[in-house]
Amino acid sequence: MTQMLRLAVVLLLAMIAPVPGPGATNNPDRPVDYFIIVTGGEILEGAFADSHTLFITKTLRPLGLRCVGMMIVDDLDEDLRSGLRYATNKADLVLTTGGLGPTDNDITRQTLAKFSGIPVREEPELLKEMSRRLNTPVEQLRANLRRQTETPTRGAFLKNRQGTAAGLVFDMDTATIIALPGPPRELQPMVREELAPYLSRRFGLRSNGASVTLRFLGLGQSQIDQTIKEHLPMAPGIRTSSQFENGRVDFTFSLPDDSPDARAKLTALRNELYKHLGGHIYADDSTTLEETVAAILQQNKGTLALAEIGSAGALSAALGKVAAKEQILAGDWVAPAEAVLYRTLKCPPEQWRQWPDGLPRLKETARLIAAQTEATHALVVGPAVRQAANGADEIIAVLRAPGDRWESQTFYLRGTDDVARGHLVSQLLGFLWKKVPPSP
Image (cartoon, rainbow, N blue to C red; front, side, top):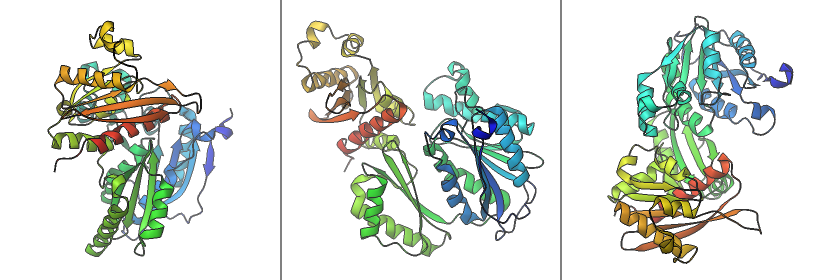
């Protein structure tokens, strides 16, 4: 593949104004120009669309930041270096997206260090946070994971509440380059909560205005849009942006000024959305679905035991990232098949094979793990059973709650990739969110 094919450049039509040197203070009414480089061979191959540019430009423009161009490059060192040379000739502020993860294709950190001449080193604060999130001692963290805690020795870093890869700020003499993570669920909160305030302070920009974010589950973006159009006429000037990932939808509503009147308008809009769609809203701040489920369990002074077959430990991994994991998770078992699970649980074959297949067996399993852990709640995710009619895998989950109350639901897994697993985790978390009622 030639470099011309790997390097897609789309210049936005805009008047280019002189840009102050890095770290200079601007007049809040004078725009600051920046350039975006999106990395990802999958985008160039047409597997995914670039959603980052639209979100970043819509979020940063109210501050007085003006995008003067963008390009998409492959995950290759020379392609990214070529893009950086072009971008730093166009603007003194460059934003890159993607390539900060733990895989061999994630080369952005190392390429930026070489391009800028600024070394990176492990940041103790990030290393400690990664150890906490992964529930693994620092000395046992794999080298590829620890690489995500490396930050520039000259510059700064932006915290990532949704993942392990921090944003990176490289302060060169001639430009500032800021690297952002690629997953939208990590990038978008970082842009709103970390990047925008950082740039406002750095360049003396105007306020980012007032905003409110509502987090939905079980509804598509089009359904939410339609409800807003039919029932919720918005006040003039309110901007909307949305993000969809793994069955979860975030809608952000914002106004350019952070005044009492603006906040009152957004509060009224939020209240109306709760009236019409409240059953699908799990948070109205940056709280994740995992954190919402954990908070409900804590409110009930509850604990959860998990046994997973069809979900392959994905639910346990998701809940294991919340700060309260040690308080809410009483025990978890993951197995590729029923026989392996029962062997791990020390349940003899002559016992579990007497239990009728399907839901009755899952209930007995829930009783078993609840007894072994003394958990108030026990969730068992059964094996995946292929359905000939639609080609999907059927997975039954059963929840045992206090008072020997039972809830069950059937889920369908279409595919085995990360996207399919992500949807299944969201559905399982939604099941817990709905079926573990909050304290009165």
